[in-house]
Image 1 (cartoon, rainbow, N blue to C red):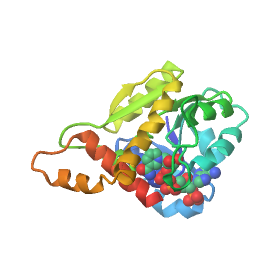
Image 2 (cartoon, rainbow, N blue to C red; image 1 turned 90 degrees about the vertical axis):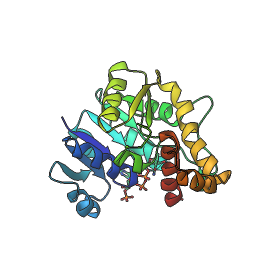
Image 3 (cartoon, rainbow, N blue to C red; image 1 turned 30 degrees about the vertical axis):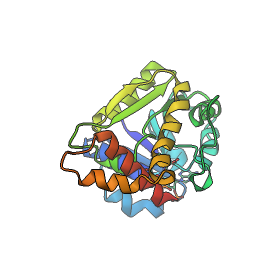
Length: 229
Ligand SMILES: NC(=O)c1ccc[n+]([C@@H]2O[C@H](COP(=O)([O-])OP(=O)(O)OC[C@H]3O[C@@H](n4cnc5c(N)ncnc54)[C@H](OP(=O)(O)O)[C@@H]3O)[C@@H](O)[C@H]2O)c1
């Protein structure tokens, strides 16, 4: 059973690398497949890249790893998702990392769920940086991967995938918990960039005793986000 990943940027490639290293087959969907031919070929022979529509059709599990601005059109491009597990790894970031475009009474994931008819939407892989997805090993143990979604079986599928690539999967229950997971991602951005904890991060990284896995996870998330902004 293959896993389709929509988007082959920082997040998509890191997840694909982690999955294929564990023997999974990955199908990427992007607007211009030729643009990613080399990057995808470098991941080995259990991976291919095609159009977004073909990738969605190819697997029962689809991971969204695209800029938030692209989410709505992709969700609505499929008339009926036919029960596919749709894992939302995006964050509804406002321009310039100035905040979130959804929150408090809804979330990006819940809005996606309204648009992706027939999909079983799960929020996962949004709270930590791309580097952690490629390699989740830390001296203090596994970083956590909170997962939420209204369908228990779909949630379990995402938790199994998170566990497979070295995370401690945490069952957060229904999809409305994405209202907490999306701001949680923003917490890391806020701490390191807006509150200037980058320097403190350096101090901690140089201490003899290793900082916690969560700290490393947060730090690398921020470094990835900085590259995006
Ligand atoms: N970077 C992180 O560490 C991190 C952490 C947590 C969550 N996230 C979230 O994950 C998402 C992806 O982040 P990223 O850093 O991987 O972004 P990225 O490096 O910019 O990659 C985005 C990918 O999506 C593709 N794409 C754009 N529009 C598309 C469409 N309509 N259909 C299919 N593919 C499309 C892009 O293809 P083209 O190159 O052809 O445009 C590219 O391959 C964002 O929502 C971000 O907030 C990122």
